[in-house]
Image (cartoon, rainbow, N blue to C red; front, side, top):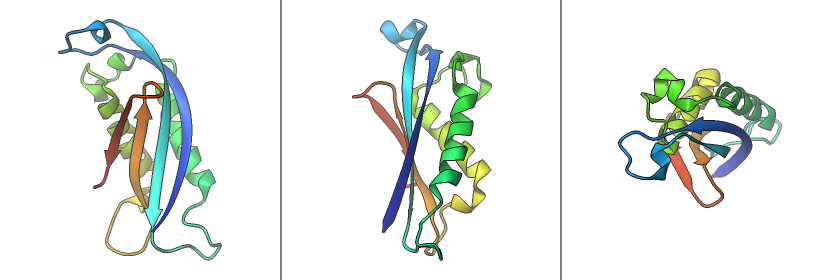
Length: 128
């Protein structure tokens, strides 16, 4: 199995509802985001997927989040946890590159999106 990974970052503010602690207050993070694509077969050029295509999609999605208050985005239902951010980014990449939807066969597919709020705190959304 081959895997490629690209990453980018964005800065945003948020607060967590239904949370009893300091994160219930408005605060910010410099998020790091990684997108992982896997597959069994390489294309004619010997690549699983063009890094440029995946990076363009990831940067585009993260640009929509950059320097915002994530609680203002309806998609997060007023509670933008790292887990919800990871799923939003995952789904957004698939909307931009529908060929990465996992199906049976050898084609490349989006395996996971990791969202790091800090160097040591990560949430992941994956297909398995």
